[in-house]
Image 1 (cartoon, rainbow, N blue to C red):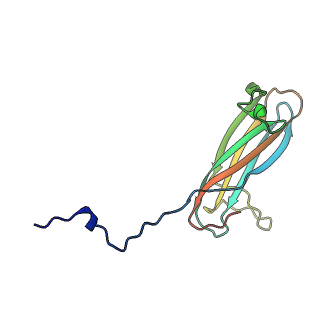
Image 2: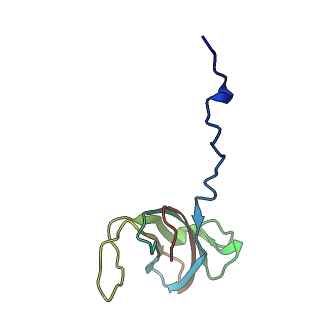
Image 3: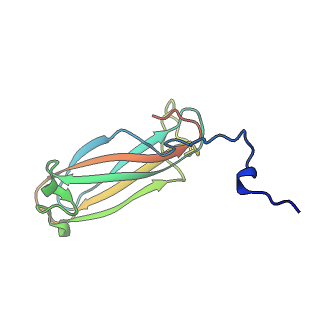
Length: 146
């Protein structure tokens, strides 16, 4: 009986092909708002694949109090008392969101990713500026996103 070496198992036409960088990253987006004691707000990002192709992703959020510096990072900044805030999220919306298409609200299709984060000022006293920055890591089978 002839033995087959491992070198002979693969066809000679097989080429080493890489998938490349399949995880994409969006540009950083930024928003800000001022919240007073016992007020809350929610920051939202919407990523749409204009080719109507599937998309799945994960948000990366950063929140700051007053200005963007390491000391003001919520929740781990040295100048931030975390007992002043409640944060929920981030999370992805897979059910429904408002997508404006001529003033029509439609359910979120599989080619849209909506990400949100909630923050509530529970005891920081006066009105406090909150700054949010986000970017999304995503995978899609056809690439044309906004």
